[in-house]
Image (cartoon, rainbow, N blue to C red; front, side):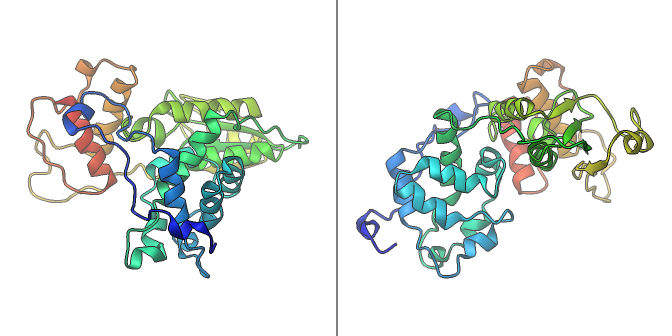
Amino acid sequence: MGDVRGFLKHDREVPTRRPVPVRILDWNEVYEDYPDESLRVQASRCMDCGIPFCNNGCPLGNIIPDWNDLVYRDRWRDAIERLHATNNFPDFTGRLCPAPCEAACVLGINQDPVAIKQVEASIIDHAWNEGWITAIRPARQTDKRVAVIGSGPAGLAVAQQLTRAGHTVIVFERADRIGGLLRYGIPEFKLEKRHLDRRLAQMRAEGTEFRVNVNVGVDLTVEELRDDFDAVVIATGATAARDLAIPGRELTGIHQAMDYLPLANRAAAGRIAHDDVAIHAGGKSVVIIGGGDTGADCLGTAHRQG
């Protein structure tokens, strides 16, 4: 990559952001789009390291230097093909992943790392805008049936791969809508549900079947699944909350994040009225224990309810 990119501006570009008082007036995603030229500048900063530690930092093993180079060369369609080779849903990871790839970027030793996450999100957004994302039907059908329990990102990725391999795949979800954590756990301002819905439309067109309001183990037994399917994939996620055994935990007004967030997300989606939410932060002083992604989701939700 010893070419003209060395002469491009190497500052890390940041997107235009609406001021906080404006952002908290709605549930839309926070960041505006990056200009294409800023993305090409970011992609140009990738050094194509002899050992690309960003690949190791990525839990999916994304071949990051490859699609950085393709974005720099304005070859967006090739870039989405390379990205999809290792990642079924870059529309989700490009928005939600904490980007360990950027922490692993060698350039970050003495500069800001490459804005890998934003490049990834922009590649998939380009692909949707250009109409490059279509249903991929299997070349042949097998006689195998697979049940997938859980419709979060893991269950959806498994279902898509198995459907494309020609198997008959049915996804079971205990909630009233498909998506798992993506649907009711993650707020709209971090992931607008239109990104999820268009992927589900693609998967339905490919042949994946979805069944909601089915609590496996209650509405449907494991024995029934074993009788009806050749294989069962359990992708239920980690829904058991971590509690704190401390004095006062039993007092009123103390709630787990995953009791609070789904209610707010249902209201934002129009499934229930905002005034009917059982746990509501409006007009209250709020203390959040934990400063990770979930704590940030609670903070943004509480601001928007207030």
